[in-house]
Length: 156
Image (cartoon, rainbow, N blue to C red; front, side, top):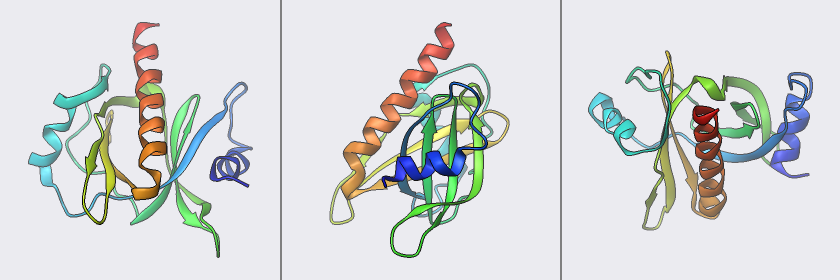
């Protein structure tokens, strides 16, 4: 069973009619404390931006979490599972219309290659995330899909 299918099972009772789980990946909180100065520039380099303000404070996440994208929202889960990662306890869930912007993801090269980015959540703060080396392409695809969904919301 894929992580997307596991997220779909985990969300089954909470999905609204017509909502589909599009993707789910294991993500990591960004390394180090960027501070407010580091967060402020991300909205300026947005891949997709909408109306609304995201306070320039980091949104707390555990070191590892499951990042899932549905047709209606972004949902984060604690990592569960004994041998393989699975969505555990729900951490955050934001409807797409609460997302103010999505930064252009940045590839961190070197031994610990990762795709790093941020998402501004209206009235809440900034979610920082990283997708590790083996999920860079899938992570870029997930974020591109999210940015496309936000652009579609803005034009409708």
